[in-house]
Image (cartoon, one colour):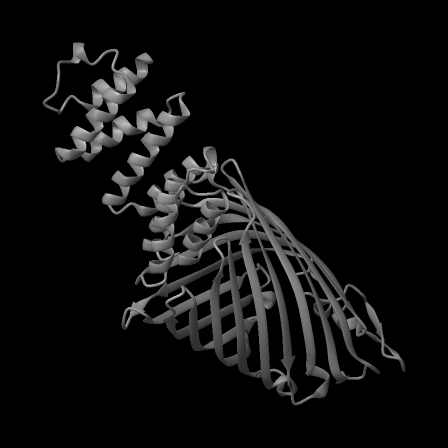
Amino acid sequence: MPGWLAAAAFAATQSMPVAPAAELTGLNPAQLFALAERARANGRPRDAQTLLEALTTDPDPEIRAEARFRLAGLLEAQGRRAEAATLLRRILDEKPDAARVRVELARLLTAMGDTGAAARELRQAQAAGLPPDIARIVDQFRTALRSRAPIGATFEIAIAPDSNVNRATGRQTLDTGLFPIELSPDARARSGIGVAPSGQLYLRLPLSSRLSVLPRLSGSARLYEEDSFNDIQIEPKIGLEHQGADGSRVTLSGGHDWRWFGGSIFSRARSVTIDWLRPIGRRGQLTASAGTSWARFPRNSGQDGTGHQISATYEFAVSARAGAALTLSGARQEARDPGFASWSGGLSALYFHQLGRASLFGSAAIRRLAGDGPLFIFPQPRREWFLRGVVGGTFRQLSVRGFAPVVRVVAERNISTVGLFDYRRLAVEAGLSRTF
C-alpha cells in the first residue's frame, strides 16, 4: 500500500480503539475497508469517510468502485443524497455495466424526487443485460417506482450570448406586395448577452397506493441589460396521477401560465392536459399527451383564442451508455384574427451518450406551420418551416457542491412567407445545473 494511504489510515483511526500506529503500516485495502466499517458501526462516520475517501483514489478500479459505493451509502445516511448520487455516477463513468450500482442510483434519484431520471437509469441497466437476480430486483423496483411520494427540485442558471434575442427578422425593409415598409430597430434582430435562470419544484402526495396529487411550480427567464427584451415565464400546475398495475400511469393536470416580455404582461393562459405513460418492454417508454389551453394577449386581442396540442414520445435505451427519443407532435391554434390562427405539426429526435464523466447530447427538430388567413397588410397567409438543432454536454468531472457545468449551442432557422417572421438565430448557454 502506498505510504500516503497508510498515513491516511493512521490519521483516521487515531480516535478509534484499534491497534497501535506501528501495526497500521502496510495495511491492505481489505483491512482498510474493515477499519472503515468498524468506524461506521461505532458511530464515527467522519473516520469512516476519511478512510473510504482515501480508497477512492486507489489505482485498482475495483477498489475505487467499492470505496465509492460504500461512501455513497455513508453520505446518504447523513442526508447528503446529491453527493451520494455523484459518487454512484462516478462509478458508472468507469463501469457503465455495473447493474447493481445503476439500480442503486435509480433508487437514490427516486428518493430525491427525480423519477424520470430514475426510470431512465433502469432502462440503461436493462439495455446492458442483467443477471436473473438483478433483473428481478429491477422489475420489482420499476413497479414501485411511481408509487413513491418524493419532493424535489431542479435549478439551472446560465450565461446566454444570443445573436437574435427577440427572434426577429434581420431585414431593414419588408415588401408587402403593395409598398415597402421600413422596420424600426426594435423590430429587427438584436443580439445580446443575457442571464438565463430556470427551475422547477415538485411534490408527489399519495392519496392511496395508486393515486397521487402532483403539485408543480416551474419558471424560466431571459434577462438582458436592455430590459425591453426580458422574457419571464411562470407556470404553476396541479395534477392527479393514477398508477396502473402494469407500470403505466395516467395524469390529468391543470394550471396557469403567465408570460412577461419587456417588463409588462405578454400573455395569460389556462390549460388542461392529460398524459399517458407506458413502459414498452424493458428498454423503452411511450408517452402520449393531449391538452387544451385558453390564452389571452393583452397587447393584441386578435391573438386571443383556444389552442389544442397532441404529442407522442418514444424513449429507449440504446446501450448502457446511450439513449434516444423520438417525438411527433401537432397543434391547432385558434384566434380572433384568422392571421394568427394556424395548424402545425413537427418531428424531433434526441440522442445522448455517456462519455466518461461527461453526458453529451444532441437534438434536431422540424416543424411545419400553416396560417388560416393573411396577417396585417401582408398578402398571403403564413407558411413556415422551423428548423432547430442543439448540441451540448454536462460535465460532472467539474462539479462543485453538486452543481454540474452544462453547455449548449442552439441554432434556429424559421423560413416564412411573411418576412416579419423569417429569421436566423445562434445562441450559446453556459451555466450550472443541479437536481435537489
